[in-house]
Image (tube, rainbow, N blue to C red; front, side, top):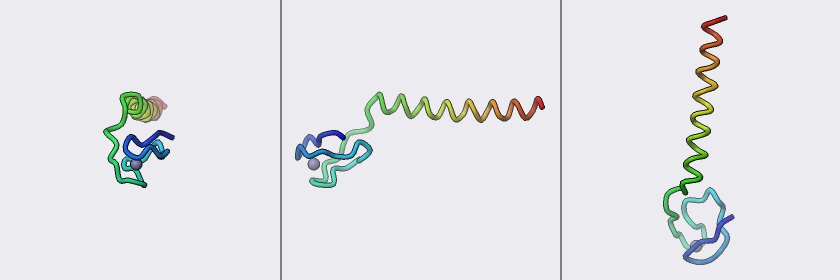
Length: 57
Ligand SMILES: [Zn+2]
């Protein structure tokens, strides 16, 4: 949970807009973006690995 800077009520971490006052949160924090990229790289990596394993079977 994080605090809405507009109304100071606790808001879901994933929420892009405060459900109480409609405050729009700025784009995801750098940490969230890094985690998202890590997930994408992991997915791509496992996909490539599966393809590689399939080619070399
Ligand atoms: Zn709010």
